[in-house]
Image (tube, rainbow, N blue to C red; front, side, top):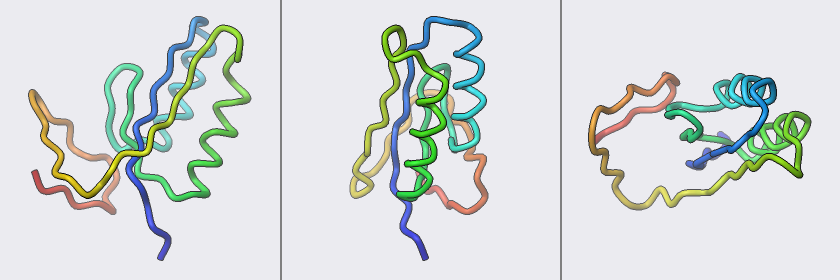
Length: 94
């Protein structure tokens, strides 16, 4: 089985048209998120596909997109209203 890693993906896109396209792409990979920041459990191949798809949308001179690998070894603490995961393959304990 392919190992998934927890990533945090975020963007700052200046054009509303590109913003909608990027949001549509990112929601396909995200298990949760808010506004322009999303939690994604990705395999290496899925991460590569995400970066490839987003790179066709953004303008590298005006927009920003970042994917950060998060350590899965520590406990995740959630403050405020939590959003249930959308992907049924994962089991969260919190």
